[in-house]
Length: 144
Image (cartoon, rainbow, N blue to C red; front, top):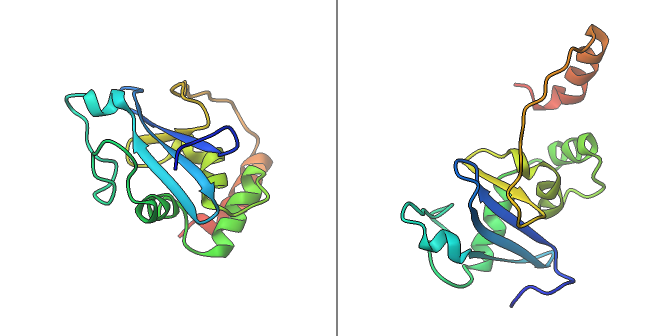
């Protein structure tokens, strides 16, 4: 199944060199395709983003692509609800959540809705004690 204008796409980028690694295309809530970019496949140091998504031309297993996306997020529904609320998303769907928070994932891959690599720059600002307390309260469920 190929992507078309009505299918949401998440682009995967390597965070160490900003190369386009591949794309996840949401065909439906239960069907997600993944394929590596030609640029990534031609890269001498290319690696699979998961052992379940081997470095091949064409679409990888839809089942494995969906599992990969789900495994980047908390398992518990309550945790996903809290995460969704904190980023202003109405759905706990893995694809929707990653479209909002995927620019900051572990594993050297970032996810964006654009083919363009993200320009992530760190910005710092002073915050008040009350703002810090509010941030801690909002994130309490993620703390051990």
